Every structure is written in C-alpha cells, then in structure tokens.
Image 1 (cartoon, helix red, strand yellow):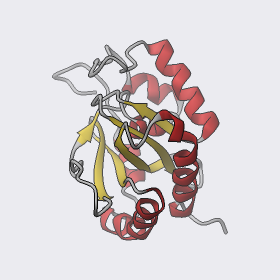
Image 2: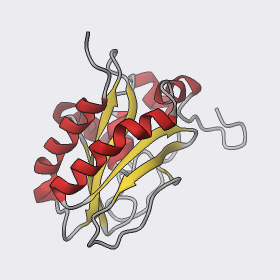
Image 3: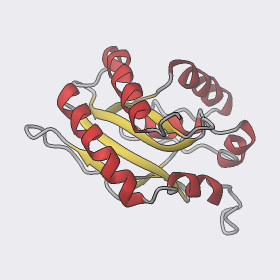
Length: 192
C-alpha cells in the first residue's frame, strides 16, 4: 500500500513475475513478435510489464509510414487501457480488489469508472482472452491487448496493438484480438 495515498498498487510478487527472466531477455524475446504484429496489422505493437502504480511500456514497434506517439517508459492507469484490463482480468480477484480500491479516475467520456462496470468488462476480457480500449485514456486511441501468461496462468507481461480510432475502430477489435492473443501465447513459457 502507498502510505501517502492510502491506495494499493500491484505488489512485488507481480513485478517479480513480470521480471523473472529479466527485462532485457523479455524485450529481446518479444521484439520479433512485436515486429510481426506490426507488419501483420499495420498498427503499433507494444510490450508492457506490471510495475508500481500500473503498467510500463518496455518496447514498441511502429509502422514506418505512420506517425505515432511513443509510450515507452510511460506508466498507464490499469482501468483505462486495454493493457491494464488484460492484466487485471487474469490476476486473482483479491489482488484486483486491492489494486482498484478507491475511486477510478475518469480520463475521457468513455473511461469506465464504476467498479461493477469494470468487473463486468474484466469478465468479458477473460472470456475472449484480450482487453479492449475505446478511447478510455486518450479519446483518439483505441486498442486491444492480451496477457503473456506463466505456467500458472498468471500475467507476466502484456502485448498490445493500438492506434487512432479511424484505423483501429471497435469493428477491428475481434480481428486484432486474435492476432494479439496468438502473439502472447507465443511469447509465454513453453510447455514441457
């Protein structure tokens, strides 16, 4: 718990899981996957890991013909992004309750700020295997994200595909969701 705010954030256990192989090894393993996702979809592909206060983007690949903002090194709110929802949906319920204790900040008109609505969205995220964001952190950015799960089905990192709403409208979420779920499964630990 952060003593200054009285709020909980993702704990050391989750950060240790996310960094078990070391961030450099994770980035190196993810880089070719991000490149394939970007090439396949024509959109920005990113890798984020859990950290104190949210998720931090470690790597991203952007299409060469597209100007885009960089999210590298930025931490983002968990409830207002597809990456955060993909992470939260696969954490144990008690941990999610601790992480989301207190008010949920509204960033745009579409930000989910009601706990029950967010819980329902996290259930949909678990069911389909990926989270979605329709302009919830920044009104012009839309995307999908899937967790990279360890052998115990706990999230180690999150892969995402995102871009402006005119290129990544909700009508593309299912198509892009399939791509990011396959990519996340390819980055996770191998069975056997």
